[in-house]
Every structure is written in structure tokens, then in C-alpha cells.
Picture: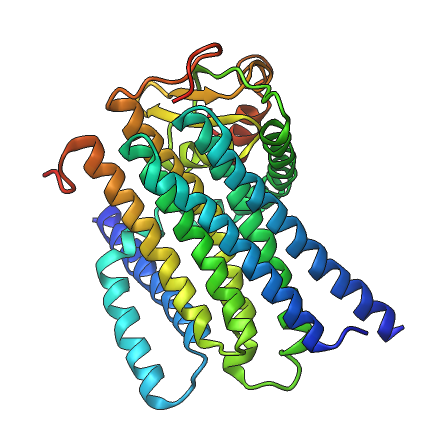
Length: 172
Length: 119
Length: 95
């Protein structure tokens, strides 16, 4: 009985949070504060919150806040990596001889949750010289296309990025 | 003092626009020069993402300085929209690249190896 | 102090250079050896168009263009995903 009621309150909380987020998004995009626009926004965001509340709120609130704090630190490191990646690609493209030596590599991770795998895959795509091809979520296996030998070694041997993502999402 | 801040801000705007255009040009040249489909996606997936984000970031700074003070609400909210656009590009562009690449790999497009003929 | 007219010239130059990159990508989209090259090039053109729309919004000073570019970003992303799924499985919606 107690478990059921707590699950129910969790659902109401999810709907409420989704409604607030959607309505804030509506206000930011429309920028009009008269009755018609605000009323239409309330109706639309109520419908969307009722239909799709389980997509946005999947975890406890305090856990998500703690994770998002670490996530911001990770994003700053990631931006620096993206800048390096762009200079790397521009160098390879504009060099007259094109120093590329593509290969396909595979490695396993211990990450399982959706968000962690999406973050790792997008980070691999944006960092120097590698693009994710295939992901097997049950085994945690990534197939990665590397444009040269050095970025492939960075993923296979150093594993800095996997450790950083695992630290953000605290998977054990 | 105000003029100094203004000059620095405009320099940042122009620099980010120039850097964005440079990266986008590098991506387009890569799309033409690189030998096969997978390596071409390396050029577009990375260079285009950062180039576009840099250009939008420069316009955002310009907007905050020139249009925002004393404007009506819908004009003041434009930087928020541009910020959403930046976040969306950072998430959507690698995902689209990955989707096309996975489709090509699963339907058996052979990757180029060193020494092969250009495709 | 730079006049706003000078900034407009800079924006115009940026927009023209983006159009040049779009033309370069158009070469790959028309002559690209296989369908995947074409899809990738079309996706690239779409994402460049987002930025082009934002810059046009500043050149003509119409805030409406930013809403259009947001919508265009969403549609381009979904279109590319649907195309990739279609090429991979031969159907868009698998039950």
C-alpha cells in the first residue's frame, strides 16, 4: 500500500516538473504575456506533461542535481577537446598529403544507462579523430571509426574519456 | 573604459565569426577532398558543429550588447533562443552523423584503407 | 567604435562565405558516388542553413527568423534520422 502511494506521488511530481519546464519553455519562446498566449501555453504544456512525463523525470531529483553539477565540469573539459579536434581535422584536411590512416576498433565499457552511453558516444564523435559507429548496449561494446593510429590508441590504451564519463554518472 | 569594453567585445564577435567560417570552410573542403564516406563524415561532423556554434555565439554576444538594453521583451528573449539552438546543435549534429554512419556500416559500405583507390 | 553598418558588412561577408561552403557541399550532394554521401551532404547543407537563417535575421533585423531557424533545426535533425533508418532497414517504422 505504502509503496503504491509513493509511486503515485512520484508520477504526480513527474507531471508537475514536466509541466513547469514546458510552460517556462513556452514563455521563453513566445515572449508575449497576454491572456490568449498564456492560456494556450497552459493548455498545451498540460497535455504534453500528461502524455510524456515519464521521458523527462526518470530519477530522484537530488540525484539528478548532483549529477548535473558534475556534468557541467565535464562539458567544460569536453569543449576544450572539441577545439583540439577541430584543429586536428583542419590540419589533416588542409595538409597537401592528407596524413590519414583509417581503421575500425572495438572496446568494451562498464557503462549501461542510456544517458551515460549517449554522452560517451557523442563525446567520442566530437573529440579528435574518432566517430562512434555501433553500440551494443547489453554488452557495453562500442565500435569506433578512427581516422589515424594515435586517436585510436587514446581510446584503447589511455581510456581518459571513459573514466571521466563513468565518474560523472557514478556507475559501479 | 566603456569604449575599451566595447572594442574588446566587438573583437570577440568578429573573431568568433571568422573562426566559425574558417572551420566551416575546412569542413567543406574535407567533404570534397577526403577519400571515402567515413572519413568525410569526420570532417563534417566535427568542423561543422564547432563552426556553427561559434558563429551563433558571436551573434549572441552582439545581440546582448546592441539590441537588448531597453528593448521589448520578445527582443530581449532572443539570446535564450540562440542558446537553445547552440545546445540543440551540440546534441543533434553528432547524433545525426552517428545515425548515417551506422546505417552505412550495417548495410556493408566498405571503409577505405591506406593505399586503396579513392572512392 | 565600429558603426552598425560596418557590422552589417561583416555579417554579409559571413553569410556569403557560408553560401560558398553550401555550394561546395552541393557538389558532393549531386555527384557523390553513393546514396550515403548524398545524405551526409544534404544533412550538412541543412545545418549550415540554420546558421544562414540566424545571420539573415540580423541583416534584415527581423527576430522572426530565429523561430524559423529553431524549427528548421528540429526538422532537419528528424529528417536525417528518418532517412538513415529508412536506408538501414528499408522501412521507417518497424513495429
